[in-house]
Length: 139
Image (cartoon, rainbow, N blue to C red; front, side, top):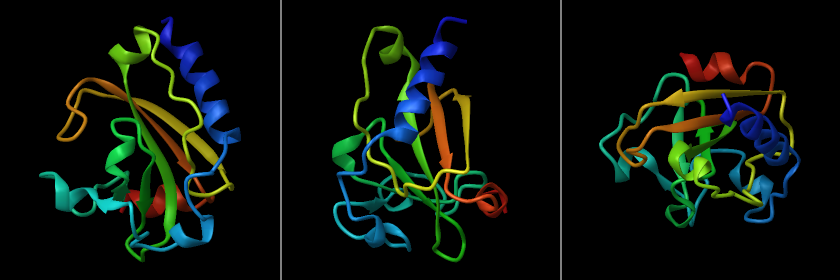
């Protein structure tokens, strides 16, 4: 699969990339404030999505994001990117994407066939911000 090496490189860049777009302290707890909007208030999605949590996104950064993912207690747990596979295959680069937190304990990358807001098949790139984050978002 030709896409996999590109995603691995992209993930490394995301994790090492800058967080210029916001003050890290300002997004530690939900709600993160402007320009972020709660995804469930803008799209027909549940407030808490098991595996991703409660998502907030700056609409200007769609489709890639970052989507800030919060657990049930409102703690920032992950930063999620949703990169359309067709765009990646056609050479689109998503450079200098913001991250919710500079701390990244692990990364998951997986396929999604599409959903409201990002209808085309895409890759979810999930940067977990602490070792317990994935478990908290799964509940």
